[in-house]
Image (cartoon, rainbow, N blue to C red):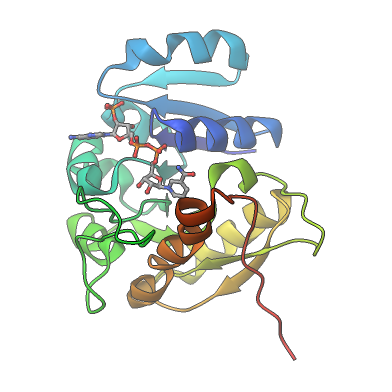
Length: 215
Ligand SMILES: NC(=O)c1ccc[n+]([C@@H]2O[C@H](COP(=O)([O-])OP(=O)(O)OC[C@H]3O[C@@H](n4cnc5c(N)ncnc54)[C@H](OP(=O)(O)O)[C@@H]3O)[C@@H](O)[C@H]2O)c1
């Protein structure tokens, strides 16, 4: 059991917070307006807490970042890079731009030579960022049941120990883990969200996840 700070008051923050609670962890969710999470706290039980981004980041043994992509760098500032130093930060964000999708293809404010997670890692150089949960819809993040068996979560990050922690969490959450290497691999993982969303945006089909087949 560990203490997980969930920086995210949206749908992804809620699903992941509930998933960590379900698997026996203690959770503090954060918002710039913590009062809006009070209702969640009262229904989520004794191991559920609410705080400001800095309070949560300080309290947690590790953190989840689940904020709007364009606000992710600001959210790290608000949490305080010093409060995240030496800790695993599970980065679920995607760099989705404000411009509308083109024929079902989301637009990003990053490019293929620089991912959002590389920017975040520079903002908090002593935190151990691991990209995870970014390439699937929130309905399938916790113990997904799909006919083809456990889907694959693509992860990356610079710290081997942090990635080992994430692998344990993904085992609990019912996922196969594929470690793609260092932070730069986020350049390839973040666009998987674009691919994942195309059937949804073009055919209203959202019930799928990726699986890596190995020989
Ligand atoms: N939706 C999915 O199924 C899915 C799947 C995979 C990955 N993702 C990614 O997960 C992330 C969260 O998605 P979501 O749909 O749950 O939430 P969202 O609506 O994209 O973002 C809401 C969160 O962003 C924060 N935020 C917004 N503007 C901010 C600012 N200027 N400064 C600091 N924080 C700000 C909010 O904090 P306050 O409470 O302080 O306002 C809140 O925690 C996104 O990056 C998304 O691409 C989503």
